[in-house]
Image (cartoon, rainbow over all chains, first blue to last red; front, side):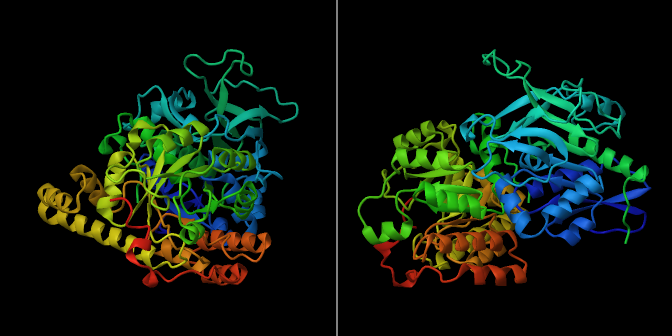
Amino acid sequence: MTVDSKPSTITVGVLALQGGVVEHLNLLRKAAGHIASPAFTFAFVEVRTAPQLAQCNALIIPGGESTTMAIVARRLGLLDPLREFVKIQHKPVWGTCAGLVMLAEQASATKQGGQELIGGLDVRVLRNRYGSQVQSFVAELELPFLDANASNAKGEAAAGERTFRGVFIRAPVVEEIIAPGDGSEKGNGDGAGKGGGRSVEVLGVYRKAEEGKPGEGEGEGDIVAVRQGNVLGTSFHPELTDDVRIHVWWLRQVVEAARHGDLVVGGA
Amino acid sequence: MATNLNGAANGSSNNDDFTVKAGLAQMLKGGVIMDVTTAAEARIAEEAGAVAVMALERIPSDIRKMGGVARMSNPEMIKEIQAAVTIPVMAKARIGHVVECQILEALGVDYVDESEVLTPADDQFHVPKHDFKVPFVCGCRNLGEALRRIKEGAAMIRTKGEAGTGDVVEAVKHIRTVNAEIARARAALAAGGELAVTAMAREIGCDAALLKQTAELGRLPVVNFAAGGVATPADAALMMHLGCDGVFVGSGIFKDAESPEHAAKRARAIVKATAHYTDKQALIEASIEHGTAMAGISNAGLRPEEKMAGRGW
């Protein structure tokens, strides 16, 4: 966690109010090794306060309990700074599980009286889509956006794998894309590198393998990964695996954003 | 501080299952799990920011006072609590009571606490926890006990402390013991390699492979919460300071609370202190908000047979 100011430093924060913080920091450090460049270095930091958030060029909101995170963030006066970070400064933000819930504009199956959200993704998430913990599961996911990534990654441990081990724990899913006039209900999943778009792209769908209730929803499976402009959300927990591919892919976009000046790269 | 335990290391037949079990505990880190006995109390806990609730019939201080045999809660009460909140609902089963655990699993609780706070049902064996899809949390007083439970399939550990007393001294003793023994295992591994670890495993009565993994990680291979006597925001912060991943608060929220509003304040204060245990200003605010704590019973005044921590092995 050294802030190094030789080259420019890209500071990536993990919101550390509660939940799987260390797991993300570990994978980020591992992923950084795949994106070596003399032009910049990474600093990975825990974020608990508004001043700490202000230091960050990008942020991960980890898994945890979204109700707890919302309550703690509100008491700290952190919700508005987070909303500004995501929606006004448009800095890269990635939410996993509870983080996806926090980044949605709407959520259903929330606690009595609802819960506060940061927003940024024009979607409505359904909390605890699969029920209680005994319905939690691991499933191999097809994530086409990682294929493009693998071709220019050199010798990653996991490169060449066709699927991603998706760990779903009391997981939410995107039940509806709510952007008015947005046509891309069903993306082809290959949104990587297009950049700049502000409509919701579907990056991953989970279809239950066998004996799935056929008539369920549109029968098209559940949306478990989405991106809208600077905001990425996943239902599952890459940080509970050793697979760095999504972290590498996301860090590349953080770097790309820095290069295009969407970021103020902080050295001081 | 990696906590990704390879399920194979503790004999889990299915690595994915153990990832999911231990993973839920990882998502609770930095949070507070509160004992509740009614749906209304569960709502107070949820609104205060609890990461989960523990459903039980009587809070430990009342079990202590009222005596008798303490058992799994009435399923009807558990269902009411499940219907009232969206956060995970845990429930306690008696040590070794396989059928209580099966009932709790069928009810769809999110975690089972095989707990010494209830009256043990089996004086020889704990529940074989790999057989269940629902994950288990178990208490420990030392590293050997923690690793025996993990070997049986526990996906989360907590200190036993001394429940229902409001006296944190035993919880402190247990986490200090675990930490000291982990340090010893690391030293043994560094100095004497696998043979030294195996000798230590024999001495503390645990699986050698799990002890080696613990020594390599420098911490328990699953999430470890504090429990048993945590009564105030400062107590919760102390347990975090000693390296716990989060805290259970049993009687400390609702015992001797002047009103539901006072209980809610206590709950909020303990959540705040746990999330910001290094922030002195937050701890001052939390301590003020908390108000008067449960009266409590000094652990030193308890006779050995009055202690719950000695149940289990």
